[in-house]
Length: 136
Image (cartoon, rainbow, N blue to C red):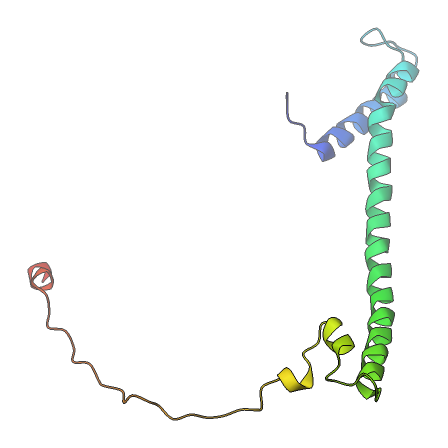
């Protein structure tokens, strides 16, 4: 199966149609009239139009998702903060944990800076190996 460059194919089709329409609209080529040729290549042109439409819809859907995600995240934050502030649930409750957050009792107590447990011993440089001397 031959590989086709879709962009070049579309340009080629349009160029043939334009030239034929402009210069020899009544003449038949390849056993086809201009209208028959247009009908034969129309599915290819329709597929390109459909892809253009789908790409536009995909971009619009991404923009819409981004805009609605902002609203959704704001609502989620309000609910989570409400759960944290609820006297029956709180930051240590199972609902808070089930929502994917770390309960307050499970969090680390804070930053601790521990000193080095073993002293750093400087290493002596390696003497040059015999292969290094041969390379010089």
